[in-house]
Length: 259
Ligand SMILES: [Zn+2]
Image (cartoon, rainbow, N blue to C red; front, side):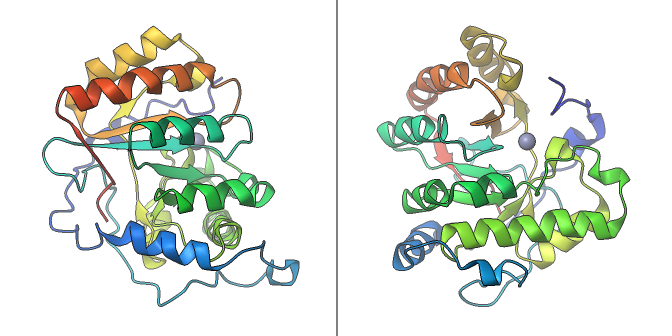
């Protein structure tokens, strides 16, 4: 499936930049604590209102982040398209087993459908990322009003599902960013988020191939892309079980993308 295809060569070339944007690196624990305070799902009546974050929205840089807050041997595990009741719990289990914190780029409708999983992700100390409402990989060709709805509605859906914890990043589906969408997301405190290593796990190339892609492409940069939804992700689960201990053994530190 070409859901994430598109070979956006320009995209990988965008400079990582973002030097010195690590001030919020210690924020995850606090955000997790916040999530624990609120219990049930948000009331339907708020469905059309704005996200209701705790505290003010702080704008972030508009450039697409690739760097890790964990330093020169840092790697960022990013998990896209969920949450999914079959695969997200398995991914969470492996991350917990190896003590790894990851960034979950969630599709708004998935978050809305599975708020318990969103809360589990946050409670485990992982970070949230807005991955749009409907995962339209050609949204960069659509009007700005459409882009705004895709981004802001997903932000609201994820924030409500999490119990008030806002996404800290925005990753356009398929990398279909525009200058407008980056600016809008950044104004909402969501740093545009890229990737360096596309494991292509959604194509189900086999666990060995996924692991080999990580090994081969890691020199490209620290942000690794996996998926926990959109089909049978058993290869992804098996690959993470091999990749995480291997990276640890090689001296890598697991972190979050810079903001
Ligand atoms: Zn995606």
